[in-house]
Image (cartoon, rainbow, N blue to C red):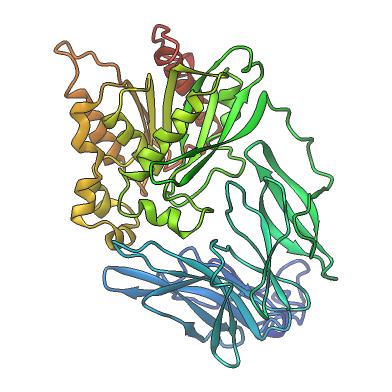
Length: 508
């Protein structure tokens, strides 16, 4: 299969040895060589970002399959016969999309994620389902469970599925019974779990556990016990010592909704109030609940900052209503939620409300731009890979077909930050990569140009632009990450602490 090549002894091509090794010119097998056969030699775009699984008997591959439709595509589910390469689409619906197929231990069923497609007024919803291959029937499990389950793992007896879902600032492991959809939360801590595996005897679950305050580490869980703490397994390195502590914080929005956040505090913050950095997550459908190497708050904490990580409207893990509150209203509840939780953080004695900044990337960068045009409460704003003019962004992103369903002309106009450029009083650090196709470089260039047009008559202005000619939506090269953090902290030194601007040596 393109993107995932399958090889099996019983499907070796003519002339290959039974173990899959390829013969040399004299007909003798060459040890260590495996014959590969492309099951889908001409898939077009059907296997873009495909997720697939192989049946236990090795005869069938289940894979996501992109079906072309007017103006875009949708994700269906196909079965590929290993012997012939023939495929047939078994799940396809113009209102639904399918992902993460996983064969049951007996090979008769498939666990799949099912999510509804968005419209301008309706956000997505997501469920876990079981597709019976022989009966050609799909059953959705736990439809009343107000969480979005990820890709499932079967228990060896086929009676239950293990899934991870965002939930109240965490990402626990849940057990879903296939017979009746009963959901049991297995992990009771504040961790975010991934890469779940089940032991062959079905008694233990293995996973990687991370958290906002913990890098990923291997753990073991009991497969049936609710609300348990994980048992840590030997890891390549010891857990890193952090320069501070993690607190939970909750504020109440004007409509009564609880808005939750993590607050990372430096050591000694209780004795001397720390300057505050508001970090806004991307997505927008996401949650601050796991360790991040790309945006790591502890590097800022080590510099003496308190870092606020809020989950405003549109965040996942708080039920469908939390997403609905901000759907098509990016500049409304997502913004007011951020300001409400920032107010709560600034009211703490260990936070200095006179020294604050806001930061965000991708949709978080969009929100940073919106914040800049709607308040001058922050000393500085860092906007990374950000959306600036929504009517320009929508047709130029690599996922234009997706945004076309959600972003009407009216929505784009009402929620576009560029309309408020004349209201920006806060110094901004604009960061963008030239190879960014999700939020094209034109967004950053236009933002920068419109800020520059409003500079002083002598050309001076308080804003800065950090441009990466060969980075994409995220800054991934280690040396470039150093440039990013060094420049961000230099900008914060200048805006939050009032130091003279000095171009970092790493950029000279």
